[in-house]
Image (cartoon, rainbow, N blue to C red; front, side, top):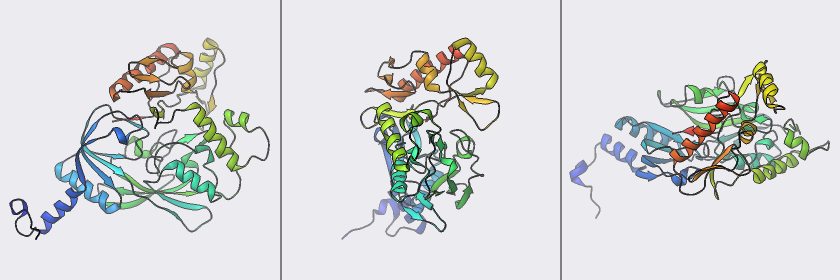
Length: 357
């Protein structure tokens, strides 16, 4: 016959004791985080919880409050670099589900859904708009935090609202697109509200019509003919990304490590005078120009260089890789050297796109 451990909670647990046991049952101690980040760098979380529902999230956060622990929300781990062990609670978000809402092309995806699988799902349902964002690693919950984007499209263009948990008030609320304050690889959650709000789901309004976006030069060159279909864009983006970017399952990386810097048009023209023809992209703000960080790093000779087990990918200067045995500090030191060299050569500071933890 089973019996309660009387030394811990008495013959029958009180409601408070039962609640504490229920909270603690999903919490793991001293968990290795290498399998949970695409760099594959080692780090240990003091506490770790796999979150499969809103109730589980609430219990985990209550556990952290009781123990006065810091909390880090983790999705696919494809845009983070652990530079040391984490002494708080890691909440690994695995809430799943995709549903269709009233209105043409409106679809909701839970935070634990894989981003690329969601794009593929929409493609197969003839819901178009995100073809340019195919094969971007990570989860639905992490994607809005930095407003992911590629090949002329970003997430904010088709987002309707986010559903989040306000961890301070323990209430669920919605953020409209405007309230998210999206910017280039940026949002309100990345700047000042990230530790308060946890993304639960995102709703998007996509189109049954073909609205191809071929503003990006690589797509124009690959798809020069009129009448391009969304499937052709999707397949082309996947092919380009596979040819240029390493698979994290084979070579640890987080994709683009730095943001593309934005400078004034006067600064850009001065750089052109000094360094010759320099590629650029227009921004939404008048008088500002975006310069490809990969071009700057390539021009500075960073492609293929190494710093011990941390290296710059041989095909793409914007991608830092764990060539085997690197830790987070190795990769961070390499990134700092790269940023310093660009500052010295071009007078431009590079800002990490990857979150440092």
